[in-house]
Length: 242
Image (cartoon, rainbow, N blue to C red; front, top):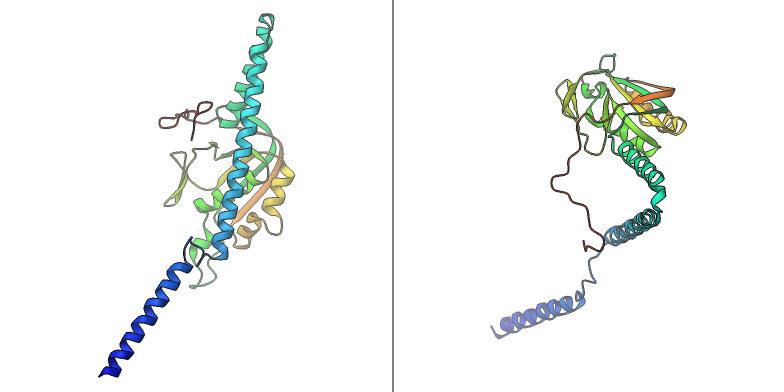
């Protein structure tokens, strides 16, 4: 009986000692941090640093322009007004508030015309979905598109493209296939990104999806149908802490 008690006391002592050692070894959160966690943290820090540098540059550019405007002599009001109007036009173009035109590509995408290979094939492989359109838009933006429209609707920061049955809702309006995507920008880069060996257009065509890309010298892109409103957002003031 005494031996049993001795064994139990010894076991409790060992377990307690182990817990103390483990607790001390985890002080400062030094244990159980995977390499991926460290890598993710380093990536986040690098991203924040890059964003901070970009913001500093933007602030510097705005301050230089403001100083230029403040130093402009009274007789140069007309020239100053022209600069302001040019900048306003630029931001309207960038934000989708102005129609524009230029060289680029016109893409036509539509459902496949072939039948499924068998009962084992998912019929969705033969249909165009919202994620296909979004992927094409993403590839265009990545390869230098300056403005994009889908079936005549301007794609801007608040655009929404969602599947609704056999149609796709674009900026709140229903559109049926085929989908006509226009993009103004570097046609060579956009074409290479979509119809190259690893391009998404090439991948869609491998499923039988209709995908055509044409280069054109003058493509028209409409302005946004609706005025963009900011209800909850406000501009950060100079010196304001975020």
